[in-house]
Length: 396
Ligand code: PMP
Image 1: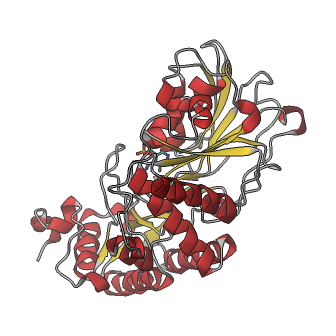
Image 2 (image 1 turned 120 degrees about the vertical axis):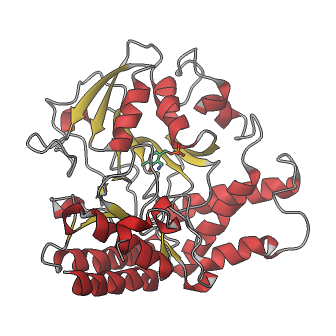
């Protein structure tokens, strides 16, 4: 049977609902995606407590304020966020922060900001930033291949000393490029706050807030910590202040306005905030952020070992192994062979391994991608690794 004749197969149009028992499904979607099973069960059970849940509670009720304060405290504790940082639950997702960052940190549209562009999301952040400030980019594209596959060294020469901030994405979700630790700005640029889009790696490794010079860090929830509709945005308090933001900054995006209103300037995403609190509790109970990092390393190793041991049957676009993402592992089958790729997608779907090809705003390429967020257990990654090994043996 030709798999090319099977283009109507649901696996090829990105279906996430294979006819197998729910317990046999592992979701490798790039987000939104599954949370750890225990957290999903807790949510389904009404968060395991009597009375109204955040789905029905007024955001100003004492019951919700307790949930809210707990979520803030648990994010702080798990991620070791120092007191001189404000934690906000913001609206508008990662894209909202692409605009909110320049609108809060640049008072004038003529202010300069430096963006490291090493993949699709940092490119998107820079493009949005250009509407509100003067963006200078450090482009990390491989000059020979035109591809993004690493992260550049940050030097005095490449960073304008007047930059209001230096922006980077710590995990490029589409390209599969991750900074396992944040880089330090050169000594003569240490006065510039670092802005980090940690949407797809937040809460999977420790962050050294002070030493890394973080000014703002944001993470949309729908990968490792919850559901779309809320974003964790952490801001160093000296960047807040009445006249800091652009006068054009909408109130809903204004860090100072929201901080002064106790994050209740308007209705926050109540249910999603409660979920984040539970995710953080789950992380703490599992052994904290170091344990999550240990698991992330083990899951990624299971897949990269198969790729590297496949004698070219599978390949990774990230040539510099030090930047290979633990969160998103793009891989190609037999140089992008369409029939084999379709066969792989159908057979893996039939086996409950789903989300390996989803649509992105950047289209569908030759690469599939296994996203190994915190909701994917080590056994799930090992199941995929075993499937990949068998598939290569049967089809090489
Ligand atoms: N940044 C990164 C690194 C992402 O992976 C994504 C979403 N995939 C975004 C930003 C955009 O987030 P949102 O869809 O919540 O706007």
